[in-house]
Structure formats: C-alpha cells, structure tokens
Image 1: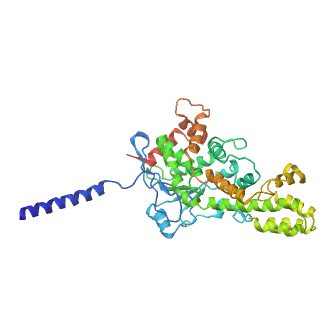
Image 2: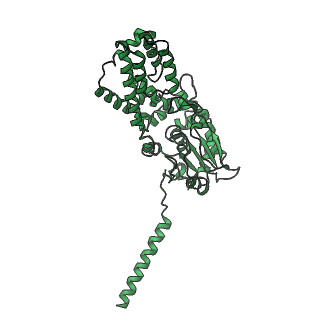
Length: 415
C-alpha cells in the first residue's frame, strides 16, 4: 500500500512539474495580441507575426492603437512603464472639425488630446486623410439621404484607401510623405549600432484606417505574408465595434429630427397664418444649434410673412440639410421641399433606419478596403520591375532604400 501511495505521489509531482515546465516554455502571447488597455480601443502588439527569412516580429516593439485621450493611470503604466513606449506617432489630422454641437471648431487632434507622460516624444504625422479623401461626415450623409441624393459611402471609402497610398487629383502623393516620416521614426528608434529599438506606438482616431494602412505597409516591409496582414487589418472591425455602436442610433435620431423639421418647413409653402411660429416649431424639432438658429431667426424677424418664411427655408437649406438653394431659386427649393410636405411618420422611420445603415461603412473595416489599397499599389508603375510591386512601392513612392528595409528587418525581427 505504501509503495502504491509513494508511486501515486511521484506521478502527481511529475505531472505538476511537467505542467509548470510547459507553461514556462509555451509563450502565452499571440501574434497581433489585443492589449488590456481600458481607456483606448484597438490597442494591439504587432509582435509574433512571421516575417522575412523565417524570423518573427519582435513583441513589445510595435504597438498600434486608437486615440489615447482616455487612458487611465494603469493604462499609462502598462504602455509607458511595462512595455516602455518612448515615442508616439499620431496620425490624426489638422483638419478643422465640427463638434457634436455643430458649432465649436477645432482640430481632430486637439479635440481629444492624448494623455501621455511628460517624457514621451510625440511625432505628429499629419496624414490629413479627411481633407484629401471623399468620405462624407455624418451630416453630409444625412443631407444626401434627406434630399434623396444617392451617395455610395462604401465606394467612397474604397476610393479613399486608394488615394491614401497612391494619391488622387489634387493630392498626387496621397499620404506617402507622412508614412515616410513614420518609417523614419522607426528607423531612428534605436541608437546607431544597436538592434534593440525603443518601443513605438502609432495611432489615429480609431486605429483602423490611417493606422491600418500604416501597419499594412510596415508589416509588408518586414516580409509578413499578405493574407496575414489583411487578417490583422480586419481584426479592427471587432475591436472598434463598441466604440462606434452609439453612432448608428445617433444618426438615426438626427435623420428623424431633420426630416421632421423639413416636413414642417415644407408645410410653410402652403400653410396660412403665423409663419414665424411654424418656422420656430420646425427649428425646435430639429438638431440645429444656436448659431444657425440665429441666422434663420434674423430672416424671420424681417417680417411675419410668407416671404420671411421662404427666406428662412432658403437659409435652412444651407445648414444641416447640407445643400445650397436647389437650382439657385426659391422655386427650386419649394419643389424639393414639397416632396416632404406629406411624408408620414412611418416613412420618416424608414429613412432613419436607412440613414443609420448608410453610415455603417465608415464605422468599420472590410477586406475590400485594404485590398483596394494593395490593388492600387500593384497597379502603379515603377522603375524597378525586378522586385515585388510592394517593395517597389516602398522604395519609389515611400522613399525607403534597400538599406532602410534591411535595417527595419534587423531592428524589428528576431529568430
């Protein structure tokens, strides 16, 4: 009995030791790991992916993320203490944006400043993606929906991805200059002669578009397989879903309010009586804010007349419904508005649902987006036809030399 007991204990001890040894030997990290950061979305370590020459991307050196304006103290300790991030590349633009009140104007970056330790260098690489790509904001989408003007949002995003890598009319180089500055930051993240770079974090607002393209170009330079790169890109869809979940209901409500306002204004053309009171009711029902309300009220104050109401309607049509007076005439405006004079609540609800659906391509990532960027790169013309198109692109469009690519691989890959 004792022998049996001793044998059982011995087997148990060996099993525990084997399990512990296995845990020590097996790295729990996975390529493209989502990091446990509470105050930011889509924060991922690009380490672990198989790259050139049978090597793998180093863990803890290349971090991609969304905006960092809500980082907690624990988040900061994790990123800048434990991981040791020394440089943050911010891809958000200088474009002036309108806030949720449709009044206050500020830059995209200033609207949500990163919460960083004092000793972290911020490299602001302004890709100006919103200025150069034909991707409408939510109000424009609503405007086109409200005025029954078709706009293919998904196609606009696809064209935007092409433009960011190869440019378009008016922006011949897309964001190539900004991405070259990004690569320069990576190349200079280690002292001369060292193969141990300081960790770099790069981000935009959601970490899905500008950052997604940056990660795709970087992983391409490191020799990661194209399909793996695409998988890393599309993972953002899951990680930003929570961030953008409230947008759909918000857009639906905004569409609902605006169309109801248009309906009330449309009724001004035929209704009699107190036009000013009716116009004020329409304004109250809308999502319009004080500055535009003041402009319209000034028109109404010119007289409680049908002419004043029409003037107000003309001013309105340059506001949230986002289009100048139809055909440049009051008659054109009247014609457009009369389509909404008798719209039913059920039809308004349908329009609200359609508006919410229409904005969805802006709130996620899809394989066709990044494929469009890669296809544009493949379709471009290069001087060196002896290397893969992506390599030629990195050299001739981004401006990396063979030495730069070799150094990137020596810095960020390991056996």
